[in-house]
Image (cartoon, rainbow, N blue to C red; front, side):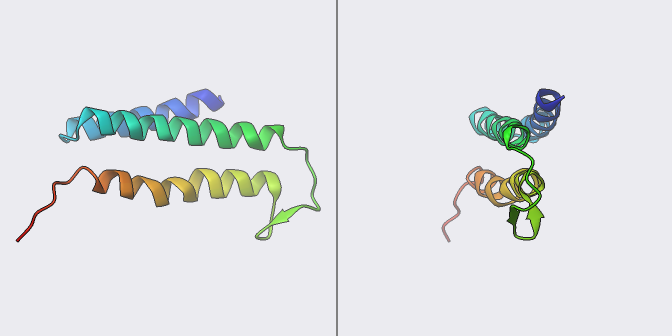
Length: 91
């Protein structure tokens, strides 16, 4: 299920990027980044021992890994990757 979530999200993003004219190399980089982030964060959350006393920004460690890793990390990194697609226009 972890691999399926990672691959479906990356695949949908990659297909949308390729159909809109984005360079294929960048689309593959974005898809690979998403697979690594989602699979890595879910895997790390499963491997971390359950300890309700360990809090990260008010959340238990497992929940913090999932929320901050899967939700916030792509929001920060993906716009930078897609900004690299657009050609620079000097006036």
